[in-house]
Amino acid sequence: MKEITPYNELETALTELDNGGRFYNILTKADDGNITSAELSKAAGAATMFTDKQKMIIYLEMSLLDLEQENKDKVLSSLSDDLFTSYKKYQPKYFVPSDDINQAEISSSAIITGIPKLIESKDEFSGFIMIPIMAGNVTTFSMIPIIELFNIYELKDVETGKDIIIAHTKGDGELPEIPLKCGGVIKELKKGKNTKQPATIFLEGLYFTQL
Image (cartoon, rainbow, N blue to C red; front, side, top):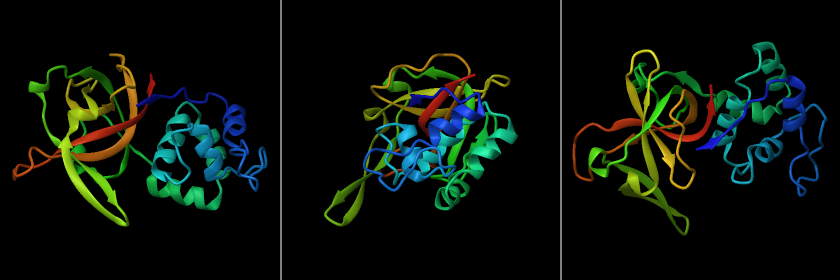
């Protein structure tokens, strides 16, 4: 997960989001009142391609967390038609760990508030995730242990102490053990390759911000 500092002023949000895109986006103009996918991709950083609409929308929602609703609506009204359509499709739902996260739709966007605690021992946690593999024009899926790609945290509810699992990409540093909002995608964690046990729901984290 990458840390985000949300905008606290409307003018700053509009300036940084309505940015003209990258140098090769020759048809995109800065400060024209129309925020496109190319411009949102640039604001989200080099690792976010304009084709990854879900990741961009999670970034956008988290970057607007500190704006009053009226100002947030002004930013959203500046989105291009296709980007606003993507926003409605991928707009994150808000949770705390005490909510019934098992009712969330798999592959949907979510923002969850809590305090992360690292699960340090591999013996404490195991499970498999599905990874797509491209072979020409054919996509297949392989199951690999989640701990090969992610550090695993329990995200604890500030009020109840209940927790859910979040996955934080290895190499992104440790998460601070303080209240955070974590944005990402709801995924399933399989207990094993041949087991019929029900999957565990977890959040594959993309962005976080301190409260």
